[in-house]
Image (cartoon, rainbow, N blue to C red):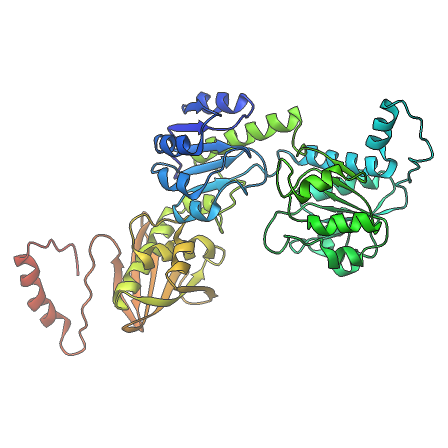
Length: 487
């Protein structure tokens, strides 16, 4: 079983003390320093194997480059937009979050904002504190019978649905990663966004800020909504186009907004204009700000670090496109993939433009990490590992495809590459105590498995008998003090 070696970890943001306690209990030296400037962090990070942050620390490419010993970055929370995950991947550094730690707090906060919008509670409270008694001005609406649209049906979205359904609210929603059947299990009617906008009395977004979601509520989509719609964002600033939302509020097309996050935090520009708007309930990013959530995310990130040290399955990884735990516990297969990739690249002349990784037999479900391990071999560069290989191979202009094939091999991997010296295909497997072997080169089956250990030399015997070739080669190799393990 392979594990992460974490001797020293830096906690650079305020997290619950249980995080430090758990790590120290498991033999990790932990330093807590929440006042580091960027320059100071760059100077300090080479000392550490792991880094734990919340949202204040910006883990930039400069920080990651400086972290010569850095193996893992943990976000005690959900969003990782303060971490350069691309740079982390390129440098082979794991990035993980705590996807379930603040779920309940964020869901409850969303529901509180929905109720506050329906009854104008903050505005009514402020008015009453000023000595006024304006009952008619703050006439509200019941939530019973209203339609809530939930964009993003992950943990938080489903918890919001569950709670609002108790009010008698109809829940509809959209998530490209959730099927209509799965949504129905949470009593949510799945539909495309174009159908959602005209139906919703309330719209809440629970998605990450990525190119497809940036500004998804804009002039066009807000214009498709019913007049008086209420819009909420307890996810990430930027999902809603703030200028468009302001225009909607000013025109009366949007009845109000509940905003916990903004494009700029603390708010400036359009963000500040929204905070000041009388129809907006604004909070300073409080979605996860409960004592329970902070304890939970601190414990979860520490537990995940410890799991990594003990070789257990890792959850919350955000920059690994395969099951890393499966890979860490399948070292012989990882080695096989790397060796096949290296052999194929070498036989193809050292330059590869395209590779096809084909699994056989029992390896049907192991394509993910095998693609990464073959990519390590195709690149054969210092610093390349399972975490960064897929990204680096794309940067190198190598297209890697995967497939599965029923064949006579009960367990095998084939790598077919197109290189500057033509096409090459090699097939290998695992024998004995996890020894990677070469079974086939092109259309030729070897008479016995060829161990992919140490140095490997291949010769063509098209023009002479194998015994004659060996008689010519062996003396030359012996003269060069090359030890021959087999042939």
